[in-house]
Image (cartoon, rainbow, N blue to C red):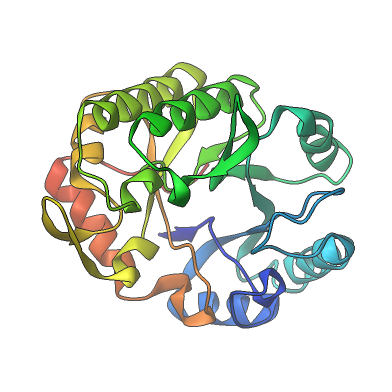
Length: 257
């Protein structure tokens, strides 16, 4: 059984293809469940790299149309990938309760800080900032609004050496996922990004082996997400690589949420 709950489209302005292009590729690949999780807009501010707010309704309508059109061939779900800022809790609730999303995927590309509204994780100047990243994720998962946590090891993409703060960040994220019953996503897009040079040597930006070694035996549920930004990526050669990585660690991923 092939499933993928992490799918984008050209609406986010950094991907290619329409929603139906992704559905057709998923059908060709034998995918049984396809979840759309476009980078969600916010109603009052453009945080960049995401769908414009004025397209949100059209996107929902299109996913609903496709779910009906292809109902006999596959299950299509309507989700969004979104960051957590506490002031938007009513917005998250509205998306789930009034727009009837099947799930929210927490993709914490930026997070709140005490001295500013938010910080992009890629701009963290030192590993102490990761502790705030983990704290924000813990607070988000505590709300019960998010079904899955996308690329929980995204902080590892920075060119900073792995240290005790990285260990503490990983531990808190994993413990929070277990405590609140949220699924951790091993993100296949990291394999597409390739190998890069880091202080400890060449490696993937993510998934980071040290993070996922900590998941072993934690009791956390794990799913693999394609994070597709092109239709052909719904199920490409990087998906088996992700499954092989988990198999090598002895982690059995779940297939449905």
